[in-house]
Length: 468
Figure 1 (tube, helix red, strand yellow):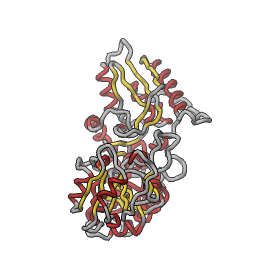
Figure 2 (spheres, helix red, strand yellow; figure 1 turned 60 degrees about the horizontal axis):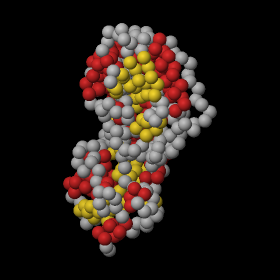
Figure 3 (cartoon, helix red, strand yellow; figure 1 turned 120 degrees about the vertical axis):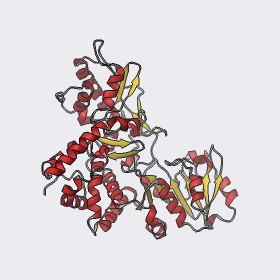
Figure 4 (cartoon, rainbow, N blue to C red; figure 1 turned 180 degrees about the vertical axis):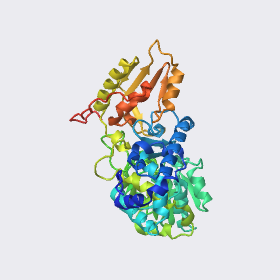
């Protein structure tokens, strides 16, 4: 069976090729099936008739559920709001999954549950991709909370856990970081204030107990030295000899994005350098909302050998899907439509595409303004990281029979979904989260025609990326 590999590793391709026919009938979540036709359309031609009809039925259900899916996502110019849009990227609230990986998740169920060797294969592939991105080994928990509990449970009951008050973050479930650690049966001491923490505040609490304590911080600490000014306002202070450092940082970059995102976003390698890192599987990594634990193999083995790990770890299917998402960031050709491809699009390219789309839409009777100055696309609704973008401010013609509300609703219920915001009588689309090669699809969705507009030739990337 000769199927398209879609950037899959060899082990994943072999599993999918063997069980694709049976797996098609297991897709249960409509939003995961919504992009199946465009991503692996060739597969439909070789599926048995019954399975192919089931896929078609689920695709229709997915279209009907598009409106309810839209209600779960906040209309912000952030990566969290993109949902199976013209770029082909699937985002569910705070959980982002590239459509190619999301579609394969139900297919992976058969690949990982009907082969007795699948567990070992998934484990090997997971360690390989983790080492490529972070230089460390990895464990995958069912959620951020499960990952934190797993690390806490692996610590001795007598160990004190210190958490800076300024970093007592609220986790996805709504519970605060200190409260979750206490629920795991550990002694938690909050240090510093809501404005910051200092080495002195840590020493005052620990006295002679540093060697039996764990510091949980989001700050970068390299070789015992605090390197982030956000920690104390005074960089270069040396930490006491604390037994373990645990970094809880939902916002990390799989690889350096210094020339793209401002301010600089810490990378996995930086966060893993001097301790154990817990981060989210979604966001930039583009996988399911799992909890990733990265660190030295001996430290992770202590966690994996606890009696609690068996129910805290992610299931095999979720881990396999996480591998597919992480492989996008390994050095090599950037997959079209991936989050990385959209991040690497230069501002000059966005401006050029905006002008082309403006000309095309105005021929169809729309009034379009291209906003390119002081426009930023945020990576997350919260947080300070952003990159320059271009917005299309679209207004219908005076003779249009469609109201602005109906126009916005049509965009939000279209397939592929296109999330936007309204500004008075205008609808605003952020081009940063639209893949460069899919402007024709974007125009088709906006115009609402039954035929795809003729495609423009691809916009060449400028030789210089100084505008990023």
